[in-house]
Image (cartoon, rainbow, N blue to C red):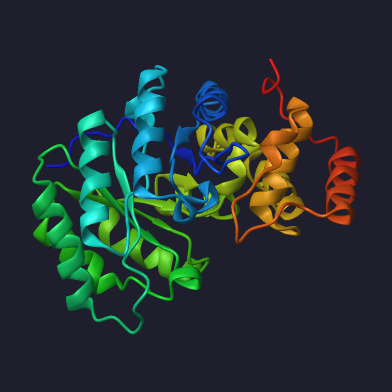
Length: 307
């Protein structure tokens, strides 16, 4: 039987600040994480919007250790630990479990394409077996538009059957609602926890029996997203969903990671926050002007971030 999860309905793939030398900045990251936690948003560190695949295993391990040392709530963390190399995935996953993280978010190996379910099953199985911990809680990460490696419902069902107390949920960033809904219908009755990959699908996910979302823009709009997750049965829920969609659209119309970092940099008056790692680039002057104009026009702000 699955044990209850302490993770909230909304998590954020936390954007990662970087120093001028390219190393992750643990102090700035801890401040961002604390603000998210204060707004009832969990910490999916080392996610897509964390620029995780632009960081080395060494950097991720050091950053996790730094966050734990700074007193961040580890039971509100779901670190991304998937990697193309099984050894890297094992090292990161084991470190997350030993730190006390409530779950790990695992991309499939994404370099080789046209992978069989047998190959993907072997990958996840080897990582789980080598970590060898009853405390391990794996959330598989489906983002086929980026990885080009879709995770079939048959594969998910096979993993759940083989590892019923370990493979406990997923983040689905496919953007394909029919797929998300099919996973919820098939596996949620068995306790499988389905998170949508965007707050655009938050209300639909909760109404269908999913548990919430792991969303990029929870980095900048945490209070409103977590409020909808809390009050999703309210008569005003559809209106609140429309408001979330508007904010999402504002950031999604620009290179999203750079735009979110620019918004944080402006709010904190800290230009270092705008750094991204190659191959990403910061917003150019025209894009930054567009973002600032949109934020002013809609009255968008990030209350409490600068406190």
